[in-house]
Image (cartoon, rainbow, N blue to C red):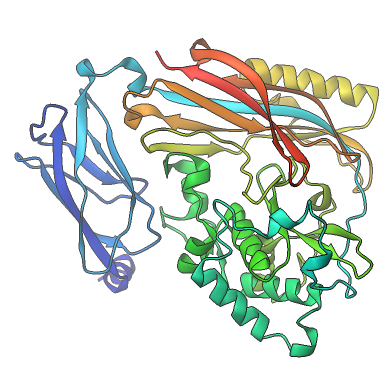
Length: 460
């Protein structure tokens, strides 16, 4: 037995079986059925039946795809493999002659923006901070509430929060910074950063799926909630921020995710005894790596990067978690993130001219100029310009009869540290665009607002 066979034999595994039917309910024979991203595959028999064994137990995010010439590929995702159990997954293949052309297409949408950044020294937590909710300003208190994906009142979240508090000496349980650091320590010690280099050959890995193919109605819905992270003990950066935020809220500390392009950190409210206060940031995802690799429990508490204080896109304007791009399909679809590109320019007339030219180039080509891939080296505290692009690709084969789709990207929130200069988009299907507009979302409780760049598509 070779090493690969030995590993496979010792790895807990389960099986998937099912039937492949066409859109008229007839069995489809000789269709290839595969576990997306892996070498595990088989073919359906004359009755349309198939079976795949020895699928490793991993995160509940497996995707199965059926393919046959002349048909739209059939897909199913969010499949949880259970040790020594058989999971049934039936798939449908639609005849291309019965399907609208757009089901054979992929939609790519990218958003690009140009901002001026004025770096500043980040706020640092203080040992004078106190856990006293009665002192929190009214506009801060909504950040104590459970959010759509931040279930701070979930029993499992509450249990872990109580364990964290119990680990702190009673004499220090009113010291807010001590509690925040205890939350940081627990998360970086107990949650693994869901990266490909840490989970090799695992196609359910969070980074693998956002890079090569994930399944769901949207990025927002695909991401684990706080309680799901606690059950899987794996997370990407957005999921780390959701969990950390939930634990802080469960311990009566206002908190919110703050996306830096697409790498959210967690902001928490530092309350001073005199009634004043301010936001600080911690990065538990990178902190998890620092702890695992070096045993460092202080690497990202507070966040080391000065931009973590001001963010780049902004922060949550209410108790719900922000996401750096949004769409929603009525049926779950296969999608992947486009990490985009980032160019930095000196703060000068020439730097601004080149930045504007590059953004215009992106609007035409869908990428920034290759000859400017080497960014200028800007001193950490020097004002500069940034052009950033970001987006996703959506496979439409499972979208069904849905022809109308709206995509939204948050515009960077302007502050004294960040000025939004220009923004635009690119898509591989400009002929499908019906409308582009700016939508503003406001929260009267927090007095915060967020502008969204919206694109409506009508698939034809």
